[in-house]
Image 1 (cartoon, rainbow, N blue to C red):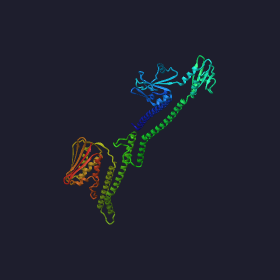
Image 2: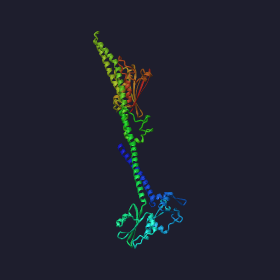
Image 3: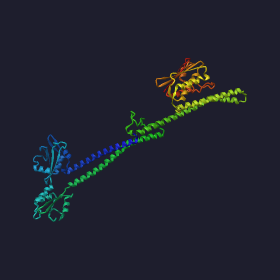
Image 4: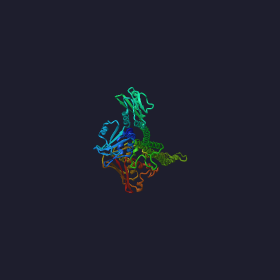
Amino acid sequence: MNIHKRFMIQLFLQLMLIFFFVGLFLFFLFGLIGYLLSDTEAEFDLLQAENYFVSENVSLEDGEATISERLKRLLDEQSGTLLVLSKEGKVLGGYPEPEGVSFKEGELAGLLLEKDPTLDYAYWELDESDSDSPLVFLRKEKGESLLLQSVVEQVDWGQGELDLPQGMASQLEGKNAWVQLVNSSGEVTDEYRAGEKRESYTQEDILELTQSMEESVSAHYDGGTQQTILMGMPIQGTAAALEETVDSKIGSSILLVAVLIFLLLLLITFWYAYKFGNPLLTMMKWIENLGKGNYQQPANHVDQPVLFKKNGKLKRKFKLYRDLITTLSQLTETLKENQDQRAKIKMTREEWISGISHDLKTPLSSIAGYSKMMESDEYNWSQAEVREFAEVIGSKASYMGDLLDDLTLTYRIKNGALPIVREEANITELVRRTVIGYMNNPDYSDKTLDFQAEDENILASVDPKWFQRITDNLVENALKYNPAGTTVTVSLSTIEDHLFQVMITDDGIGMDQQTVNSLFQRYYRGTNTSDSGSGTGLGMAITKQLVQLHQGSINVKSRPGEGTSIRILMPF
């Protein structure tokens, strides 16, 4: 999965998770606000109480109901009566105390059917999850309805007068109430404590008056005389206070919700910054370090990698950027390898220049010496002597060319710049050609060369050019550095189905252990330019490097006077 798809999936899942938690948060928040508002409504009117409010304030233990002090206070303030009954009708408790307080059958029917106009009833199940839960009944007197009913009983409908007795007038005055009697034409025919109220009413005026938020207005219509009694009293702050309290709580709740949403968004912002920003900053710092030449993965103050755990696994917050981290890791390794390669090339180039300066000094000295001798006026050189000098100069020039070729080859091998073009070749044929070539060389006619092959068709993947160079170097060394009469045997065989083996053995003068250990070092035998048969001193070093390029190995065994055995192992 590429980083684009991973980003899409991550963002989708995280947004879904955020929406879920935000929704859950808002659900509980608005639930809390609803609880507070409902609790406030119950403070002003117990009839509006929710089931949970009753369950919180009425407890049942050992068959007896206990009423909380808070609920008792509200019952006193709102002139209410509470009764807790079992499903069987047994009184479990109440407030005021149940003694002397009971519901008549007619009242119970009114409670259930809501027929009694002077009373308000409500009931709740104490435990909604229990089918046998006790019931909690609340009865509240409608003070306004009772007072209006008393006024109606005192009105002289025939005369169109209120005719209120002193006790009733005192009761109205105590409640700061007013009364008006309105005839069928809407004219006020009698009033009590009406003050600046209207002297006449339309039907719309009466409807508007009964819906007033400042005072509670009740009306009674007498169908026989077509007269209406209007009675009003101040709301006494109850509804206004409730509205003010509810508005205040709603305002506070909205402010609280806004603050909490802001804090939640701030938290989400910090979380996103940590989740996505911190890894990006780490990788930007990584890229910046690469630009400065610091080819290392990011590490903390104690040089521990910040991207990976101790067990080597990628840390969770970086997993989203796995592809990018892999690419940067590869880039870092490549740049580091290039840096090491440049340092290696620089070092080997200096070695190469130093080697050329040293190795060419001797043949150049010989060439310069012979040149000066030839141009000297003190001697008259014969034609034969001039030809001899020219032959020496040509030999040294040829040696210098071979030396430059070998130095360049070792330089290329060291720096991995030598191309190895593998192809399936017949190893038996390649080795046979080498042996035949040296058999036909008159310089080695005083030595015996033998070839033994286990199979005429041993096939392997090699670079024919450089494999030929390996066998040429080894066979030539065996012939060159041994006396006349030496027998050199070249044998070829396979080891199981994985390797083939080339053995070059001789019965010549052999070598001591120090020579064997140093055989593959550059110039170990030295280069004596006076010896026309000497090589460049790099042949065996090049041979070992070429064998290793073919993923092979080379081993030498020798003892003075017992000859030498060289074994090459290479994979097919």
